Image (cartoon, rainbow over all chains, first blue to last red; front, side, top):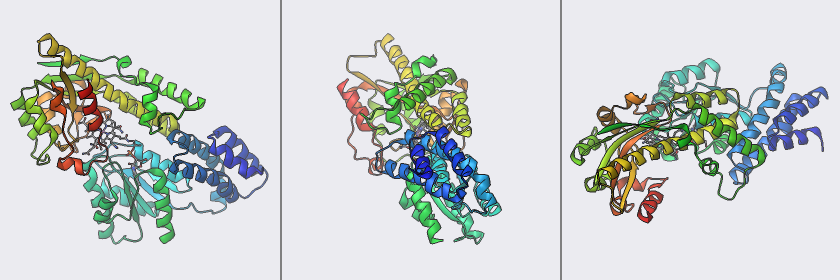
Length: 212
Length: 237
Ligand code: B12
């Protein structure tokens, strides 16, 4: 088995130290960093994502795989930057103002990074303007908002409206999620996408990026 | 009467199996060895970091009606609206695990221990429920001491944010119970700090008072009807 397939396989098994070791080896063999990323790390993570969606593996497995993904990505990142390889997309992520629930948003962030996106996590209790300021300052493609409370859902609407007001519609897209949020609510407030979990969020974001 | 409840960390440590269910790992799926180790580590951290505290205050039905009315934002009809007037005992309650657990979860995410952080989070959510159980037991003991606990008496908890009881009801509940005494504060969004906290009312009475059909406005959009299991347990004793 070639080294990239081995990276993918060890990643699937969540073996972070092995993934780091093999990535180092692949770099030493002068394989292109983008190849190592695509055919090694991302290939492995894709399989994990598919198996998770098919209920063949579960959240803890995904999280162990994500940790292994980062172990490899940390080594590759400087080389990808050196080679001018752009990330799959840049995403601003946060839990909206008034809410402190973090865990769902964190999981979404892990999965998005695992799929090769650059994620700038603003944490929780994020005021509407901060999402947009961060997006414009960092040249982000997308804003992801999370909330677990009905009382803070209107903040999502404010962010979408503010994007419109600032003439950024189409330039910055939005994806929303969290327990009380539905696809219908996302449509109602004019968000571009919704997902009920992290792994489907990756699919939605990929689709949005392809449409852009 | 209003009473703080001493809860030890040991009282709130969930069963490993329950934590797995909380992580949506289906029953019958065995966790591998590595995962079991993480699970044990999470429960050790939870034992070391949680400072559970609870509080309850008995309240008469008419006074509770006022608290329940809150800011007038409840659904037009709710299960609790029919339950509380039939209760033989009511107590507002609040519990928390303290701040440290949430800090630890944040820290673990920060250092990329994602799996451990997520397991700890799920375990801590269950620990908050177990802290609620501890307060409920204490209230049951008070009822029993006053001869108000009969054979068919069942206690169940109801919380703002569930079953048509609007989240804004937290304000009236807090004004009356004052959980700041055990370190819980309320934000404008009606979220409590620390995060791993719970509030609500414990209703005691014959099992049948807790039984309701899912015909209320809140039932229509409910994706997580945990009430069914709670009612089943109440009715089966
Ligand atoms: C566990 C839990 C708790 C725990 C702790 C919560 C925590 N996370 O720390 C405890 C028991 C302490 C608790 C307490 C309370 N809770 Co609670 N709780 C839940 C529960 C059952 C699960 C939340 C959770 O942790 N999920 C696990 C994570 C991984 O999932 P997630 O956050 O939803 O994220 C996933 C998706 O939503 C999505 N996603 C999330 N963000 C994003 C963002 C983007 C961009 C995308 C694409 C996707 C996405 O992907 C994530 C990964 O799969 C939910 C019900 C539910 N089904 O969600 C209620 C829920 C959030 N709680 C609720 C309530 C009302 C409360 C209380 C107010 C009750 C009370 N009066 O005591 C308190 C409030 C606590 C406080 N501090 O104020 C309500 C909120 C309803 C409302 N009206 O707003 C809910 C929705 C239950 C309900 N009624 O249906 N709770």
